[in-house]
Structure formats: structure tokens, C-alpha cells
Length: 155
Image 1 (cartoon, rainbow, N blue to C red):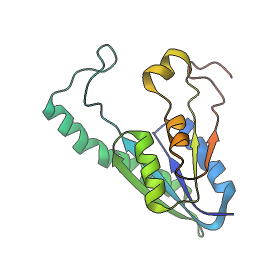
Image 2 (spheres, helix red, strand yellow):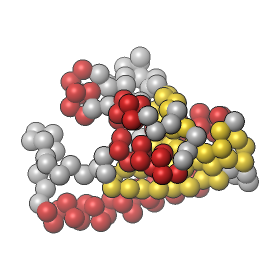
Image 3 (cartoon, rainbow, N blue to C red):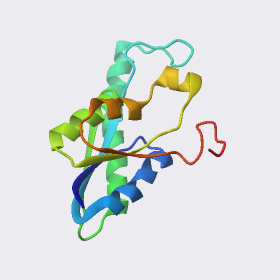
Image 4 (cartoon, one colour):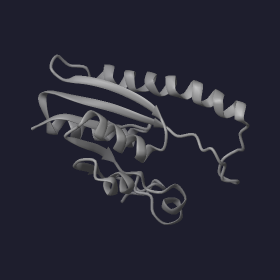
């Protein structure tokens, strides 16, 4: 069994679906680290994001990291049990980079993450965090597929 697993969360139920899988593969006395990446685009993509001033960017950065940490702490509290250690970490940066760097930093045995199942234009516009993490080779990555496609239809 694995001793330390990293689970990236983005606030979605889909991402949280990976938690059950992580619990199933980890040693009963193991550690799960929940990670959230706060990625605020520095250059807006017109038509998809509203433009932000430097002050807006700084305020968003200041406010969003504590919000991400609070979210992770609430998930950790729901997961609490007598044996499993749950740690949380919220960082500023691109999700794939934060996940890969955190996996290396903590020397985790594996990453357990859900994939949103985007395809076509959405995948091109937003990229695939899962593919980027897989290609960075930080450690074994368990990918939990979405049960529904991004548009809400069953897969």
C-alpha cells in the first residue's frame, strides 16, 4: 500500500470523487495531502475572462489563497478519521506545475486526480491539467475518469 498520496482539488465534486479512490489505495495509517492551485491569468483571453487591473490581480491573489486553504481544510475535516493523516496546501500558480512540483517536494508515492473529460475546443482552450501532470513524470498518477462529459451528457 502507498504511504503518501497527493490529491489535487479544484472545488468541484468531480475532483473530490478522487478522494474515495485515494483512500482505497493508501495504507490505513498513511497520509493524504490535498492541494489546490490558485491560477489567476496574468494576460486575459478576451471573450473568456474579464480584464483585470494590477490592483484587481493583487486583491484576487490575496483573497483566493485563504479561500482555497479554507476549502481544503473543510474537505480534510470531512475526511478525518483516527488513523489517516490529512494535510492541506494551497499555492499560487498553474495547476499542473503546482501539482507536479508539490509531488516532488513532498516525495509522494502517487497522485490521484480526476479528469474533467474535456475534448475538442474546450481542451485546446483550457488545456489538460491531467496530461501536463502525466507528461511531467513526478510519480505514478492515478487518473479517475469523469462519469459524464464536460457538457453534462453521460460518457
